[in-house]
Image 1 (cartoon, rainbow, N blue to C red):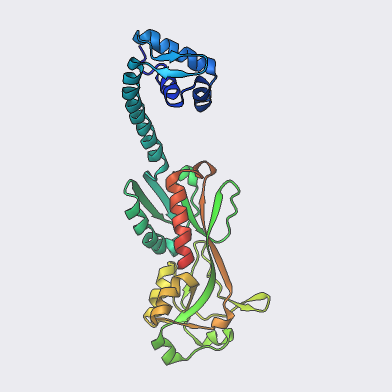
Image 2 (image 1 turned 90 degrees about the horizontal axis):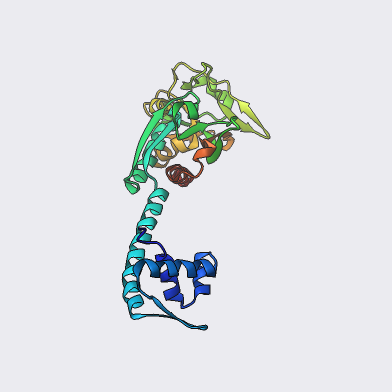
Length: 295
């Protein structure tokens, strides 16, 4: 026998004092409520309500049964609410693929998010290749530059500008360039992109960007090494603003040609449409958006 058969209808009638109101509360017909209560009375062998044309009142057996049933239903509802809340909380493994240029920043931003979500395991993969999210079982991809895949949902994390920086010791030795053309007389640490070509330094010049004839003797394929080289006094480098911001605030690097900052690449979080409403994906992307906005 189903112990809960008719119980929900019985409790609703007991609490509303009406079959009609109970039916409205449960989203069924009054006839269905009446039938459920009659079946419950038959199963228990007890009369639970005294009925008149205008009023429904619990019998002594009905009152005793109601007190126990109310508590039992409350526990069942609490259990359902707990399961529902669990499904809405970020949990399980979250796999994020990120460009090396932003990997250390994503890692630092992830640390406090993980402390707030103890049920999540984060796997962070560094790669300068575009991840095929569905083939590589990646939840979120962090991409720098245009997103051309129409099959992905893209959330903007930050728009950037290019900043050109050097260490105080380097600038004391070599002087500060006043125009992009002056860079031919400077050591310029350059970045080689995954496809093998060098990133062209870019400056704003009216409505159109100006590519500087940057001299180079040191080339690296890791964006973080650009700043490391600049801090060591090896030369100037050009990086997205968020990368240099802490070092500029601390005075460890100095920006040059700041009036000619050009717009840089946009940073995106991308994911498959099917993962749009997955709690761990929604929560982590929102966290990155908030943190990049402050970077």
